[in-house]
Picture 1 (cartoon, helix red, strand yellow):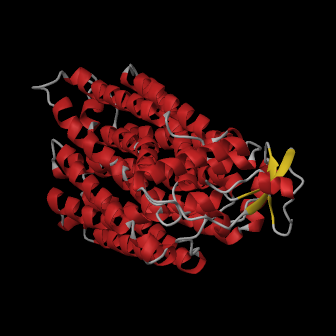
Picture 2 (cartoon, helix red, strand yellow):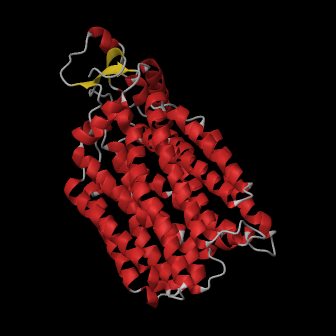
Picture 3 (tube, helix red, strand yellow):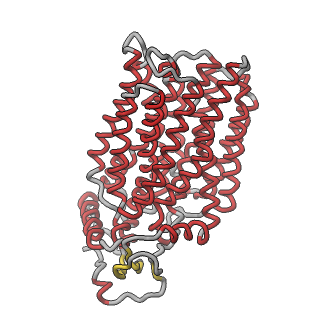
Amino acid sequence: MSHGVETGRITTDIPARMDRLPWSRWHWLVVLGLGTVWILDGLEVTIVGSMTDALADPKTGLGMSSFDVGLAGAMYVAGACAGALFFGQLTDRFGRKKLFLITLGVYTGATVLTAFSMTPLWYFVARFITGAGIGGEYAAINSAIDELIPAKYRGRVDVAINGSFWVGAAGGALLTIPLLDPTKVDQEWGWRLAFGLGAILAIGILIVRRTVPESPRWLFIHGREDEGEEIVRDIEQRVTSESGKDLPSVSDTITIRQRKTISLALIAKTVFTMYPKRTVLCFSLFVGQAFLYNAFFFTYGDTLIEFMDVKQTGYYIAVFAVSNFIGALFLGPLFDRIGRVKMLTGTYVLSGALLTYTGMTLDSYSAVSLTAMGCLIFFVASAGASAAYLTASEVFPMETRALCIAFFYAIGTAAGGIAGPLLFGKLIEDAVNGGEGISAIAVGYYIGGALMIAGGIVAAFLGVKAEGRSLESIAKPLTAEDDAEPTDDERRRSPQPA
Protein backbone atom coordinates (compact mmCIF):
# COMPACT_ATOMS: atom_id res chain seq x y z
CA MET A 1 0.00 0.00 0.00
CA SER A 2 1.27 3.44 -0.82
CA HIS A 3 -1.38 5.47 0.94
CA GLY A 4 -0.62 7.35 4.15
CA VAL A 5 2.66 8.14 5.81
CA GLU A 6 4.61 4.94 6.30
CA THR A 7 6.64 4.79 9.52
CA GLY A 8 8.01 1.24 9.51
CA ARG A 9 7.28 -2.45 9.22
CA ILE A 10 6.73 -4.83 12.12
CA THR A 11 5.66 -8.40 12.70
CA THR A 12 3.44 -8.70 15.75
CA ASP A 13 1.54 -11.37 17.66
CA ILE A 14 -0.64 -8.92 19.62
CA PRO A 15 -3.96 -9.93 17.94
CA ALA A 16 -3.36 -13.62 18.70
CA ARG A 17 -2.39 -12.86 22.30
CA MET A 18 -5.51 -10.75 22.84
CA ASP A 19 -7.80 -13.41 21.34
CA ARG A 20 -6.40 -16.28 23.45
CA LEU A 21 -7.11 -14.57 26.78
CA PRO A 22 -9.71 -16.19 29.06
CA TRP A 23 -12.53 -14.02 30.37
CA SER A 24 -11.40 -12.00 33.37
CA ARG A 25 -12.21 -9.10 35.66
CA TRP A 26 -10.29 -6.83 33.27
CA HIS A 27 -12.79 -7.63 30.51
CA TRP A 28 -15.63 -6.72 32.88
CA LEU A 29 -13.92 -3.35 33.38
CA VAL A 30 -14.01 -2.82 29.60
CA VAL A 31 -17.69 -3.73 29.49
CA LEU A 32 -18.50 -1.41 32.40
CA GLY A 33 -16.44 1.50 31.12
CA LEU A 34 -17.46 1.33 27.48
CA GLY A 35 -20.71 -0.58 27.23
CA THR A 36 -22.77 1.35 29.76
CA VAL A 37 -23.03 4.34 27.43
CA TRP A 38 -25.94 2.66 25.63
CA ILE A 39 -27.82 2.97 28.91
CA LEU A 40 -27.56 6.72 28.45
CA ASP A 41 -28.87 6.48 24.90
CA GLY A 42 -31.84 4.44 26.08
CA LEU A 43 -32.45 6.90 28.90
CA GLU A 44 -32.47 9.82 26.45
CA VAL A 45 -34.84 8.28 23.94
CA THR A 46 -37.27 7.01 26.57
CA ILE A 47 -37.48 10.26 28.49
CA VAL A 48 -38.48 12.04 25.29
CA GLY A 49 -41.00 9.34 24.38
CA SER A 50 -42.57 9.30 27.87
CA MET A 51 -42.99 13.02 28.42
CA THR A 52 -45.19 13.97 25.49
CA ASP A 53 -47.81 15.61 27.73
CA ALA A 54 -45.26 17.54 29.77
CA LEU A 55 -43.55 18.92 26.65
CA ALA A 56 -46.88 19.71 24.97
CA ASP A 57 -48.25 21.86 27.81
CA PRO A 58 -47.04 25.46 27.23
CA LYS A 59 -47.24 26.12 30.99
CA THR A 60 -45.00 23.26 32.13
CA GLY A 61 -43.22 22.38 28.88
CA LEU A 62 -42.51 23.92 25.50
CA GLY A 63 -45.90 23.76 23.77
CA MET A 64 -44.86 20.96 21.39
CA SER A 65 -47.30 19.09 19.12
CA SER A 66 -47.16 15.39 18.21
CA PHE A 67 -45.33 16.36 15.03
CA ASP A 68 -42.86 18.41 17.11
CA VAL A 69 -42.16 15.35 19.27
CA GLY A 70 -41.44 13.35 16.12
CA LEU A 71 -39.30 16.21 14.81
CA ALA A 72 -37.29 16.24 18.05
CA GLY A 73 -36.66 12.53 17.57
CA ALA A 74 -35.59 13.15 13.99
CA MET A 75 -33.22 15.93 15.11
CA TYR A 76 -31.65 13.58 17.66
CA VAL A 77 -31.12 10.93 14.99
CA ALA A 78 -29.83 13.48 12.45
CA GLY A 79 -27.29 14.63 15.02
CA ALA A 80 -26.31 11.02 15.65
CA CYS A 81 -25.70 10.49 11.93
CA ALA A 82 -23.59 13.63 11.62
CA GLY A 83 -21.70 12.87 14.82
CA ALA A 84 -21.00 9.30 13.77
CA LEU A 85 -19.42 10.40 10.48
CA PHE A 86 -17.47 13.28 12.00
CA PHE A 87 -16.16 11.46 15.06
CA GLY A 88 -15.85 8.10 13.24
CA GLN A 89 -13.03 9.25 10.98
CA LEU A 90 -11.34 10.95 13.94
CA THR A 91 -11.53 7.66 15.87
CA ASP A 92 -9.62 5.82 13.14
CA ARG A 93 -7.10 8.66 12.87
CA PHE A 94 -6.45 9.66 16.50
CA GLY A 95 -7.34 6.53 18.43
CA ARG A 96 -10.26 4.91 20.20
CA LYS A 97 -9.58 6.25 23.69
CA LYS A 98 -9.29 9.96 22.82
CA LEU A 99 -12.57 9.87 20.97
CA PHE A 100 -14.60 7.82 23.43
CA LEU A 101 -13.67 10.40 26.07
CA ILE A 102 -14.47 13.37 23.81
CA THR A 103 -17.80 12.02 22.55
CA LEU A 104 -19.02 11.29 26.07
CA GLY A 105 -18.09 14.86 27.00
CA VAL A 106 -20.13 16.19 24.07
CA TYR A 107 -23.11 14.12 25.14
CA THR A 108 -22.89 15.30 28.74
CA GLY A 109 -22.72 18.99 27.86
CA ALA A 110 -25.59 18.75 25.38
CA THR A 111 -27.79 16.92 27.90
CA VAL A 112 -27.30 19.75 30.36
CA LEU A 113 -28.31 22.22 27.61
CA THR A 114 -31.45 20.17 26.97
CA ALA A 115 -32.44 20.43 30.63
CA PHE A 116 -32.30 24.24 30.35
CA SER A 117 -34.35 24.46 27.11
CA MET A 118 -36.57 27.55 26.98
CA THR A 119 -38.02 27.24 23.46
CA PRO A 120 -38.70 24.40 21.01
CA LEU A 121 -35.84 25.66 18.81
CA TRP A 122 -33.39 25.49 21.72
CA TYR A 123 -34.68 21.99 22.50
CA PHE A 124 -34.23 20.83 18.88
CA VAL A 125 -30.66 22.17 18.71
CA ALA A 126 -29.75 20.58 22.05
CA ARG A 127 -31.19 17.26 20.87
CA PHE A 128 -29.12 17.47 17.69
CA ILE A 129 -25.88 18.01 19.65
CA THR A 130 -26.79 15.24 22.11
CA GLY A 131 -27.33 12.91 19.16
CA ALA A 132 -23.94 13.90 17.73
CA GLY A 133 -22.25 12.78 20.93
CA ILE A 134 -24.13 9.47 20.93
CA GLY A 135 -23.38 8.88 17.22
CA GLY A 136 -19.69 9.38 17.87
CA GLU A 137 -19.96 6.94 20.77
CA TYR A 138 -21.31 4.19 18.50
CA ALA A 139 -18.25 4.45 16.25
CA ALA A 140 -15.62 4.78 18.99
CA ILE A 141 -17.08 2.27 21.43
CA ASN A 142 -17.99 -0.58 19.08
CA SER A 143 -14.56 -0.48 17.44
CA ALA A 144 -12.77 -0.43 20.81
CA ILE A 145 -14.86 -3.24 22.29
CA ASP A 146 -14.33 -5.58 19.35
CA GLU A 147 -10.57 -4.97 19.44
CA LEU A 148 -10.31 -5.61 23.19
CA ILE A 149 -12.66 -8.60 23.61
CA PRO A 150 -11.39 -12.14 22.71
CA ALA A 151 -12.82 -13.65 19.52
CA LYS A 152 -14.55 -16.46 21.43
CA TYR A 153 -16.75 -14.00 23.32
CA ARG A 154 -17.00 -11.13 20.83
CA GLY A 155 -20.48 -11.91 19.48
CA ARG A 156 -22.33 -12.34 22.76
CA VAL A 157 -20.56 -9.41 24.43
CA ASP A 158 -21.20 -7.02 21.55
CA VAL A 159 -24.88 -7.99 21.27
CA ALA A 160 -25.42 -7.74 25.03
CA ILE A 161 -23.67 -4.36 25.25
CA ASN A 162 -25.65 -2.86 22.39
CA GLY A 163 -28.77 -4.38 23.95
CA SER A 164 -28.04 -2.57 27.23
CA PHE A 165 -29.70 0.44 25.55
CA TRP A 166 -32.88 -1.07 26.94
CA VAL A 167 -31.66 -1.01 30.53
CA GLY A 168 -31.54 2.76 30.15
CA ALA A 169 -34.89 2.71 28.38
CA ALA A 170 -36.53 0.86 31.26
CA GLY A 171 -34.85 3.12 33.82
CA GLY A 172 -35.88 6.22 31.91
CA ALA A 173 -39.48 5.06 31.67
CA LEU A 174 -39.68 4.36 35.41
CA LEU A 175 -37.84 7.58 36.20
CA THR A 176 -40.45 9.67 34.40
CA ILE A 177 -43.27 8.28 36.57
CA PRO A 178 -42.39 10.22 39.75
CA LEU A 179 -40.79 13.12 37.86
CA LEU A 180 -43.95 13.71 35.83
CA ASP A 181 -46.33 13.20 38.77
CA PRO A 182 -47.66 16.68 39.71
CA THR A 183 -48.26 15.50 43.28
CA LYS A 184 -44.57 14.72 43.74
CA VAL A 185 -42.62 17.10 41.48
CA ASP A 186 -43.52 20.45 39.94
CA GLN A 187 -44.24 19.61 36.28
CA GLU A 188 -42.29 22.61 35.10
CA TRP A 189 -39.14 21.04 36.56
CA GLY A 190 -39.78 17.29 36.34
CA TRP A 191 -38.72 16.74 32.73
CA ARG A 192 -35.72 19.02 33.20
CA LEU A 193 -34.55 16.98 36.21
CA ALA A 194 -34.81 13.81 34.10
CA PHE A 195 -32.26 15.17 31.62
CA GLY A 196 -30.07 16.45 34.45
CA LEU A 197 -29.89 12.97 36.01
CA GLY A 198 -28.73 11.62 32.65
CA ALA A 199 -25.82 14.06 32.70
CA ILE A 200 -24.85 12.97 36.23
CA LEU A 201 -24.82 9.31 35.13
CA ALA A 202 -22.60 10.24 32.18
CA ILE A 203 -20.03 11.84 34.48
CA GLY A 204 -19.88 8.61 36.52
CA ILE A 205 -19.26 6.60 33.36
CA LEU A 206 -16.55 9.04 32.27
CA ILE A 207 -14.64 8.42 35.53
CA VAL A 208 -14.67 4.63 34.96
CA ARG A 209 -13.86 4.97 31.28
CA ARG A 210 -10.60 6.80 31.91
CA THR A 211 -9.09 3.51 33.16
CA VAL A 212 -9.79 1.66 29.88
CA PRO A 213 -6.63 1.57 27.70
CA GLU A 214 -6.18 2.40 24.05
CA SER A 215 -6.66 -0.49 21.61
CA PRO A 216 -3.29 -2.28 21.16
CA ARG A 217 -4.36 -3.15 17.63
CA TRP A 218 -4.75 0.55 16.77
CA LEU A 219 -1.42 1.36 18.43
CA PHE A 220 0.76 -1.09 16.51
CA ILE A 221 -0.66 -0.07 13.15
CA HIS A 222 -0.02 3.61 13.88
CA GLY A 223 3.65 3.20 14.80
CA ARG A 224 3.20 2.92 18.56
CA GLU A 225 3.85 -0.79 18.99
CA ASP A 226 5.83 -0.27 22.22
CA GLU A 227 2.76 1.20 23.91
CA GLY A 228 0.61 -1.63 22.56
CA GLU A 229 3.10 -4.20 23.82
CA GLU A 230 3.11 -2.63 27.28
CA ILE A 231 -0.70 -2.67 27.46
CA VAL A 232 -0.91 -6.32 26.38
CA ARG A 233 1.77 -7.39 28.88
CA ASP A 234 -0.11 -5.62 31.66
CA ILE A 235 -3.37 -7.35 30.69
CA GLU A 236 -1.63 -10.73 30.56
CA GLN A 237 -0.12 -10.21 34.01
CA ARG A 238 -3.53 -9.31 35.43
CA VAL A 239 -5.20 -12.34 33.90
CA THR A 240 -2.41 -14.68 35.00
CA SER A 241 -2.52 -13.34 38.54
CA GLU A 242 -6.29 -13.69 38.66
CA SER A 243 -6.47 -17.22 37.25
CA GLY A 244 -3.26 -18.58 38.79
CA LYS A 245 -2.47 -20.27 35.49
CA ASP A 246 0.09 -19.56 32.79
CA LEU A 247 -1.24 -18.41 29.45
CA PRO A 248 -0.56 -20.59 26.40
CA SER A 249 2.00 -19.30 23.93
CA VAL A 250 0.92 -18.22 20.45
CA SER A 251 2.50 -18.70 17.03
CA ASP A 252 0.22 -16.63 14.79
CA THR A 253 1.72 -13.31 13.70
CA ILE A 254 0.90 -10.60 11.22
CA THR A 255 3.28 -8.31 9.34
CA ILE A 256 2.17 -4.68 9.17
CA ARG A 257 3.31 -1.63 7.24
CA GLN A 258 2.76 1.04 9.87
CA ARG A 259 1.15 4.35 8.90
CA LYS A 260 0.18 7.47 10.78
CA THR A 261 -2.93 8.01 8.65
CA ILE A 262 -5.09 6.17 6.14
CA SER A 263 -6.62 8.30 3.40
CA LEU A 264 -10.39 8.66 3.07
CA ALA A 265 -10.05 7.66 -0.59
CA LEU A 266 -8.58 4.32 0.44
CA ILE A 267 -11.31 3.81 3.03
CA ALA A 268 -14.01 4.51 0.43
CA LYS A 269 -12.33 2.12 -2.00
CA THR A 270 -12.25 -0.54 0.71
CA VAL A 271 -15.94 -0.25 1.47
CA PHE A 272 -17.31 -0.01 -2.05
CA THR A 273 -14.90 -1.99 -4.23
CA MET A 274 -13.08 -4.50 -2.04
CA TYR A 275 -16.13 -5.57 -0.03
CA PRO A 276 -19.27 -4.73 -2.05
CA LYS A 277 -21.31 -7.66 -0.70
CA ARG A 278 -20.53 -6.72 2.88
CA THR A 279 -21.49 -3.15 2.07
CA VAL A 280 -24.94 -4.26 0.86
CA LEU A 281 -25.30 -6.52 3.90
CA CYS A 282 -24.57 -3.78 6.44
CA PHE A 283 -26.73 -1.23 4.66
CA SER A 284 -29.70 -3.63 4.66
CA LEU A 285 -29.30 -4.52 8.32
CA PHE A 286 -28.98 -0.92 9.48
CA VAL A 287 -31.90 0.43 7.44
CA GLY A 288 -34.22 -2.31 8.69
CA GLN A 289 -33.43 -2.02 12.38
CA ALA A 290 -33.23 1.78 12.32
CA PHE A 291 -36.71 2.23 10.83
CA LEU A 292 -38.19 -0.46 13.05
CA TYR A 293 -36.90 0.97 16.30
CA ASN A 294 -36.97 4.67 15.64
CA ALA A 295 -40.41 4.63 14.04
CA PHE A 296 -42.02 2.46 16.70
CA PHE A 297 -40.22 3.45 19.88
CA PHE A 298 -39.81 7.20 19.44
CA THR A 299 -43.62 7.58 19.20
CA TYR A 300 -44.92 4.62 21.23
CA GLY A 301 -45.79 6.79 24.22
CA ASP A 302 -47.70 9.13 21.90
CA THR A 303 -49.58 6.15 20.43
CA LEU A 304 -50.71 4.96 23.87
CA ILE A 305 -51.82 8.44 24.90
CA GLU A 306 -53.67 9.41 21.72
CA PHE A 307 -55.44 6.14 20.85
CA MET A 308 -55.75 4.23 24.15
CA ASP A 309 -56.23 7.02 26.70
CA VAL A 310 -53.17 5.97 28.72
CA LYS A 311 -52.24 8.73 31.17
CA GLN A 312 -48.96 7.30 32.45
CA THR A 313 -46.92 5.49 29.79
CA GLY A 314 -43.84 4.82 31.90
CA TYR A 315 -44.89 1.35 33.09
CA TYR A 316 -45.77 0.18 29.58
CA ILE A 317 -42.50 1.38 28.08
CA ALA A 318 -40.48 -0.09 30.95
CA VAL A 319 -41.96 -3.56 30.37
CA PHE A 320 -41.36 -3.21 26.65
CA ALA A 321 -37.74 -2.18 27.27
CA VAL A 322 -37.02 -5.05 29.65
CA SER A 323 -38.15 -7.58 27.03
CA ASN A 324 -35.68 -6.06 24.57
CA PHE A 325 -32.73 -6.39 26.94
CA ILE A 326 -33.67 -9.94 27.90
CA GLY A 327 -33.84 -10.81 24.19
CA ALA A 328 -30.32 -9.47 23.54
CA LEU A 329 -28.98 -11.16 26.69
CA PHE A 330 -30.51 -14.59 26.03
CA LEU A 331 -30.14 -14.73 22.24
CA GLY A 332 -26.68 -13.08 22.13
CA PRO A 333 -24.68 -16.27 22.93
CA LEU A 334 -26.35 -18.01 19.96
CA PHE A 335 -24.53 -15.65 17.58
CA ASP A 336 -21.31 -17.36 18.74
CA ARG A 337 -22.73 -20.89 18.97
CA ILE A 338 -25.18 -21.20 16.06
CA GLY A 339 -23.49 -18.52 13.94
CA ARG A 340 -23.96 -14.99 12.67
CA VAL A 341 -25.72 -15.81 9.40
CA LYS A 342 -28.43 -18.08 10.81
CA MET A 343 -29.18 -15.82 13.75
CA LEU A 344 -29.29 -12.60 11.73
CA THR A 345 -31.64 -14.20 9.20
CA GLY A 346 -33.89 -15.70 11.85
CA THR A 347 -34.22 -12.63 14.08
CA TYR A 348 -34.82 -10.19 11.23
CA VAL A 349 -37.36 -12.30 9.30
CA LEU A 350 -39.32 -13.41 12.36
CA SER A 351 -39.57 -9.96 13.94
CA GLY A 352 -40.52 -8.42 10.59
CA ALA A 353 -43.28 -10.97 10.06
CA LEU A 354 -44.65 -10.42 13.58
CA LEU A 355 -44.66 -6.64 13.12
CA THR A 356 -46.54 -6.96 9.83
CA TYR A 357 -49.15 -9.18 11.48
CA THR A 358 -49.52 -6.61 14.28
CA GLY A 359 -50.20 -3.88 11.74
CA MET A 360 -52.93 -6.01 10.14
CA THR A 361 -54.69 -6.50 13.49
CA LEU A 362 -54.10 -3.12 15.16
CA ASP A 363 -57.79 -2.47 15.87
CA SER A 364 -58.00 -5.55 18.09
CA TYR A 365 -55.39 -4.48 20.66
CA SER A 366 -55.68 -2.78 24.01
CA ALA A 367 -52.79 -0.92 25.61
CA VAL A 368 -51.79 -4.06 27.52
CA SER A 369 -52.09 -6.50 24.60
CA LEU A 370 -50.27 -4.17 22.17
CA THR A 371 -47.43 -3.83 24.68
CA ALA A 372 -47.35 -7.62 25.10
CA MET A 373 -47.14 -8.07 21.33
CA GLY A 374 -44.41 -5.45 21.19
CA CYS A 375 -42.49 -7.37 23.85
CA LEU A 376 -42.62 -10.52 21.73
CA ILE A 377 -41.58 -8.74 18.52
CA PHE A 378 -38.69 -6.87 20.04
CA PHE A 379 -37.47 -9.76 22.19
CA VAL A 380 -36.46 -11.23 18.85
CA ALA A 381 -35.61 -7.99 17.05
CA SER A 382 -33.30 -6.57 19.72
CA ALA A 383 -30.69 -9.30 19.29
CA GLY A 384 -30.70 -8.87 15.51
CA ALA A 385 -30.53 -5.07 15.71
CA SER A 386 -27.60 -5.25 18.14
CA ALA A 387 -25.86 -7.73 15.85
CA ALA A 388 -26.03 -5.20 13.00
CA TYR A 389 -23.44 -3.12 14.88
CA LEU A 390 -21.41 -6.26 15.55
CA THR A 391 -21.43 -7.08 11.83
CA ALA A 392 -20.28 -3.65 10.68
CA SER A 393 -17.51 -3.60 13.28
CA GLU A 394 -15.96 -6.96 12.43
CA VAL A 395 -16.27 -7.46 8.64
CA PHE A 396 -14.09 -4.54 7.48
CA PRO A 397 -10.33 -3.90 7.95
CA MET A 398 -9.15 -2.49 11.26
CA GLU A 399 -7.96 0.82 9.83
CA THR A 400 -11.50 1.57 8.63
CA ARG A 401 -13.50 -0.01 11.45
CA ALA A 402 -14.77 3.06 13.28
CA LEU A 403 -15.59 4.96 10.10
CA CYS A 404 -17.36 1.95 8.60
CA ILE A 405 -19.53 1.64 11.71
CA ALA A 406 -20.23 5.37 11.48
CA PHE A 407 -20.94 5.22 7.75
CA PHE A 408 -23.50 2.43 7.94
CA TYR A 409 -25.02 3.78 11.12
CA ALA A 410 -25.41 7.19 9.44
CA ILE A 411 -26.87 6.09 6.12
CA GLY A 412 -29.04 3.38 7.65
CA THR A 413 -30.31 5.59 10.42
CA ALA A 414 -30.82 8.52 8.06
CA ALA A 415 -32.94 6.32 5.81
CA GLY A 416 -34.96 4.72 8.63
CA GLY A 417 -34.34 6.75 11.76
CA ILE A 418 -35.13 10.22 10.46
CA ALA A 419 -37.97 9.24 8.16
CA GLY A 420 -39.49 6.87 10.73
CA PRO A 421 -40.25 9.30 13.57
CA LEU A 422 -41.44 11.96 11.13
CA LEU A 423 -43.72 9.48 9.37
CA PHE A 424 -45.19 8.06 12.58
CA GLY A 425 -45.57 11.49 14.12
CA LYS A 426 -47.47 12.66 11.02
CA LEU A 427 -49.60 9.50 10.90
CA ILE A 428 -50.61 9.90 14.54
CA GLU A 429 -51.38 13.60 14.17
CA ASP A 430 -53.46 13.10 11.00
CA ALA A 431 -55.34 10.17 12.54
CA VAL A 432 -56.21 12.16 15.68
CA ASN A 433 -57.21 15.30 13.77
CA GLY A 434 -59.28 13.25 11.31
CA GLY A 435 -61.01 11.26 14.03
CA GLU A 436 -59.60 7.97 12.75
CA GLY A 437 -58.62 4.97 14.85
CA ILE A 438 -55.24 3.40 15.48
CA SER A 439 -55.43 1.36 12.27
CA ALA A 440 -54.57 4.57 10.39
CA ILE A 441 -50.95 4.19 11.47
CA ALA A 442 -50.66 0.55 10.31
CA VAL A 443 -48.74 1.59 7.17
CA GLY A 444 -45.77 2.41 9.41
CA TYR A 445 -45.83 -1.14 10.76
CA TYR A 446 -45.94 -2.57 7.24
CA ILE A 447 -42.92 -0.56 6.12
CA GLY A 448 -40.92 -1.54 9.20
CA GLY A 449 -41.84 -5.21 8.81
CA ALA A 450 -40.94 -5.28 5.13
CA LEU A 451 -37.54 -3.66 5.74
CA MET A 452 -36.71 -6.15 8.51
CA ILE A 453 -37.68 -9.15 6.38
CA ALA A 454 -35.60 -7.78 3.49
CA GLY A 455 -32.61 -7.38 5.82
CA GLY A 456 -32.96 -10.98 6.96
CA ILE A 457 -33.07 -12.28 3.38
CA VAL A 458 -29.95 -10.29 2.49
CA ALA A 459 -28.18 -11.73 5.56
CA ALA A 460 -29.06 -15.26 4.44
CA PHE A 461 -27.23 -14.78 1.14
CA LEU A 462 -24.49 -12.28 1.99
CA GLY A 463 -23.85 -12.86 5.70
CA VAL A 464 -20.29 -13.50 6.95
CA LYS A 465 -19.48 -16.48 9.19
CA ALA A 466 -17.38 -14.51 11.67
CA GLU A 467 -18.07 -16.49 14.84
CA GLY A 468 -14.90 -17.47 16.74
CA ARG A 469 -12.57 -15.93 14.16
CA SER A 470 -9.99 -13.23 14.74
CA LEU A 471 -10.75 -9.81 13.31
CA GLU A 472 -7.64 -10.03 11.12
CA SER A 473 -8.82 -13.29 9.52
CA ILE A 474 -12.29 -11.89 8.79
CA ALA A 475 -10.88 -8.79 7.07
CA LYS A 476 -7.13 -8.45 6.51
CA PRO A 477 -5.77 -5.03 7.62
CA LEU A 478 -5.06 -2.69 4.72
CA THR A 479 -1.48 -2.36 5.93
CA ALA A 480 -0.88 -6.12 6.19
CA GLU A 481 1.63 -7.93 3.99
CA ASP A 482 0.96 -11.51 2.98
CA ASP A 483 4.33 -12.66 1.78
CA ALA A 484 6.87 -10.45 3.50
CA GLU A 485 9.38 -12.37 5.61
CA PRO A 486 10.08 -10.51 8.86
CA THR A 487 13.65 -9.50 9.56
CA ASP A 488 15.43 -10.42 12.80
CA ASP A 489 14.94 -6.86 14.02
CA GLU A 490 11.21 -7.04 13.33
CA ARG A 491 10.93 -10.28 15.28
CA ARG A 492 12.72 -8.70 18.24
CA ARG A 493 10.22 -5.81 18.24
CA SER A 494 7.31 -8.19 18.95
CA PRO A 495 8.34 -10.49 21.83
CA GLN A 496 6.33 -13.42 23.14
CA PRO A 497 4.78 -12.92 26.59
CA ALA A 498 6.90 -13.87 29.54
